[in-house]
Image (cartoon, rainbow, N blue to C red; front, side, top):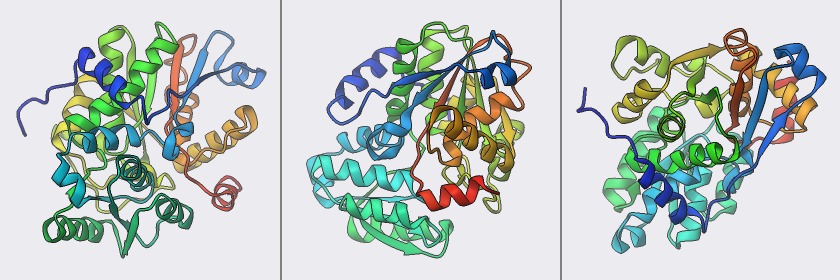
Length: 327
């Protein structure tokens, strides 16, 4: 294991929010309050959902990507950046490259949703398609070393966590004294940053992570105490499909997350339907993970509590959305 990771301080998070404000939206928070909510969770459970799916690029990802790229020197920016992603991070890097006046060359698996590939291209990114995620990291490494482009990691590193911490800062300013927050976990970049911010502002708030059963990398890492990897990602929530954990984000998550719960793909589908019917949101599976955890494994534990969820992003086309929720 690496030395203990240093979490972003509240002073650093506030300064990061100011730096990002030109290119990042402060996304809204909605209250879920309906008869269906009362039936599922009881009348005393208060539920808030931060709609990060309304962020530029359709997810929280630009916060970290922008902050990393804003810290590059002029020579590095001129050479451009590269990234690996099945969608949301690639879109975010494309957006960040466009607003910062540089060029992005993103590597995506051929299985990536065509809608996401198109969004990257619309933002001016050059898209390289390869057979799988492992091959994508190899190709990004080649681009980095042969073309001199800076690799923007999808979830690891202090600047990435500092960017995602601004989500937690905004949340605590919008909703005071939450009893619990449930954060989706892929590689852990979002959970690490958000949890670090929320814990410093509201130390009494319980913070949970949620992963799909078919991509339980961080859950396994919590058990072993070391960054773990999985043989294959087997979930509809491809945005949460990190094939491995890494030391920094894992260390911060272990420090601030009480535990990680797991949800099945059918739980995600059910939560997607619920968000559409109740809130009129077209959510990709990852964006429904917090709700799936609340109405599933955390329901009894959080009954009667003031709970924050996050719809972390939604880059999904209507046909894919329909095919998923009808199953």
